[in-house]
Amino acid sequence: MFLVILLYLFFGISFTILKFLFNMTDPLTVTFWRLLIAGGFFIFFYFWRHRKWPKIKVKDRSLFFQFTLIAIYLTFTLGSWAVLYISSIKACFYYNLAPFVTAIIAYFWYGRTLSIKKIAGIIVSFLGFIPYLRAAAQYESESVFHAFIWLPDIAMALAVISYAYGWLLINELEKRGYAAELINGVGMLAGSGLVLGTMMITKTAIPIAEMSKFIALLLLLILVGNIIFYALYSYLLHYYRPTFLSFMGIIAPLFAGFFGWIFLSEPIPPAFFVTIFIVALGLFIFNYDELMNVAS
Image 1 (cartoon, rainbow, N blue to C red):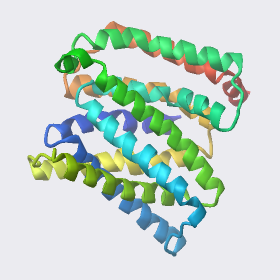
Image 2 (tube, rainbow, N blue to C red; image 1 turned 120 degrees about the vertical axis):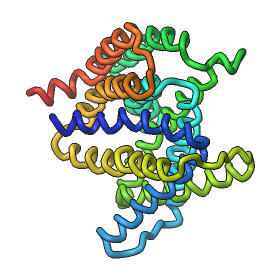
Image 3 (cartoon, helix red, strand yellow; image 1 turned 180 degrees about the vertical axis):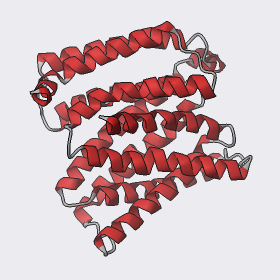
C-alpha cells in the first residue's frame, strides 16, 4: 500500500512542478522538452530491453497517429495551457474523471454495457466536482478571459478526455504486440515534433529564465511524472487491479493540495474536502463490484 501512496504522491507533485516551470517559460516550451526527453528515454529503454530497433506495421500506423495526436499532443498541450490559469489542485482533480470518461468511451468503442452502479458512480462523481469548482472560481485568474471564464476548464476537460481515450489506444496497440514503452516512446517523440511545429506557427515561445533551475525542475518532472510514475504503475498492476488503482487515485488531489498550499500558496477551501468525499464515494460506487472482489 505504501507504493500506491507513493505513486499518487508523485502524480500530485507533478502539477506543482509544472507551475514552477511555467514561471520560467511558456507551456509549449516545457511540453516540447518534456516529451522529447521522456520519449527518447522510452525508446532507449525499449532498445536496451529488446536489443532491436522498433518496427511498426503499416496497418497499425493510423493507431499510432491517433495516439500521438490525441493522447499525447492534445493531452499535454491543452493540459499544460490550462494549468497556467487554474490551480494545480483543480488540474489534478480533473484527472480523477479519467476512469469514468474511459468507461463512457469504451461503451461506444467496444459496445460494453454500463451497469446501474457504474452510471450512478459517474453521476455522483461529476456532481461532486461542483462544490470545489464554485469555490475555486473565486480566487483563480480566470477573470482574464472575461466572457470566456471557463475556457481553461474546457481545455483541461478536453485534455482528460484525450488522456482517457489514449488508454484505450494503448490497450489496442498492446493487443497487437507492441510494448508499452515503444507506444509511449514513439508517441512522445512524434508529439514533441507536433509541439515544435505549433511553436513555430504561433511564435509564442518565451526565452527560458534561470536555465539551470529550469533544467533541474524539468528533469525532476520527467523523472517523477513520466518515468517513475509509469514504471511504478506498471509494477503495481502485477499486484492490484486497475479498478483499485483508479479508486486510490482520489488521494492524488490531497497531495496536490498539500504541495500547492506549501509551495504555491494556493488556498484550500472547505469545499475541497467536500469534493474529495463525494468523488471518492462516486469512485467507490463505480468500482463497487471490483473492489469487493479485491476485498474478498
